[in-house]
Image 1: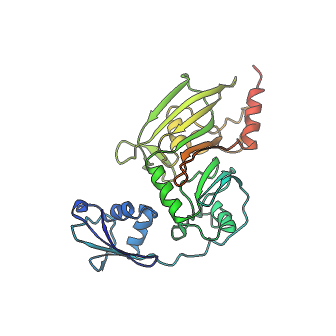
Image 2: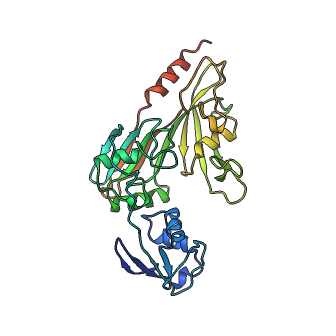
Image 3: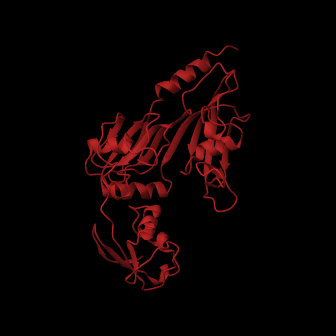
Length: 318
């Protein structure tokens, strides 16, 4: 383990141990200071906020040697786009450490290109003024949901909780269950998809199953209800947490999520059933509270648009 020489909000210094020789600089920093992500450290490196042996570096791929002195500083966060704003969301559970919410569809989780205001993060800052992770522009966020995915989302209210829950997620000790309306129903009743995911080689806004350079991803599914028009309601277990994982995996077996136009789920114009967005909902989250040891299992009810779509499907004529 790296020897930390000093650590405060403005300057962190540490030294590389023999067992860490050969590590990439960005991997080294993300492994030892897990309250920040590797992408965050890459930005710091590119902006020359990281030094190795007293000299600024600009490449995260730099290989470290035993005894190298690493230092980084965190620049003042840019408050633009992170001003508190009132945003509606349902709170399912709250204590001094954690917050569980039921995210509505259409709500962007954190600021990004084209979404500088009105995100969940802005709403969180309206209620909680001192959340961890402000430097990354994602205060309190442990994981994310896509804009049009509804459902349960976990937020850390302090630095200790953020680090603890990040570790629990990395250990895959969290059980995550989703529900989706599929545009085409699988012939089997259940199954499991294991396929690595990475950025699409051409369409950069998409993810794809890739043979090289992808990250391990596993998804299990089970059909809960079949409908007369060939659609179905499926329960989906997310074993890993890759970007767009469920959407890509389900589309890969020709059973895309209804309404997911990015991955082949466009509802035909002749269909008697219409949906306003991708019908994907994060239904439940189960984990052990990192401080109380209590087993927490929370369920977020379907949003009204998904309930209405399911009711129309159940009433669909034979």
